[in-house]
Image (tube, rainbow, N blue to C red; front, side, top):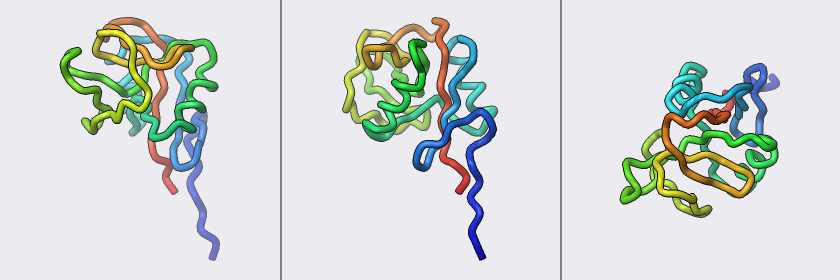
Length: 124
């Protein structure tokens, strides 16, 4: 018997073992994370340079929220599941919430309006 693999949901894009969703309008970080959670996902996490390259290319010119945040500039960056970010790519700025821009990763305040990207493991 052939195994059937569930693809990513409609309007999501599959890359290796993950599905990514790119928003169509901007919102603040809190709304973006709530939106992702309602889709059984989180604000986007990348685990290697290839995934980051894909996100950077696919977000086009839009600044887009990802799932990195910290309690203060003295604290480490963490993903939404509270695992620590390995700082492979430095995050610019002194704020607490991270987003992708055309130069890499920057930080801003929670209520800034940005596009967003959700990610989840695909259901294979």
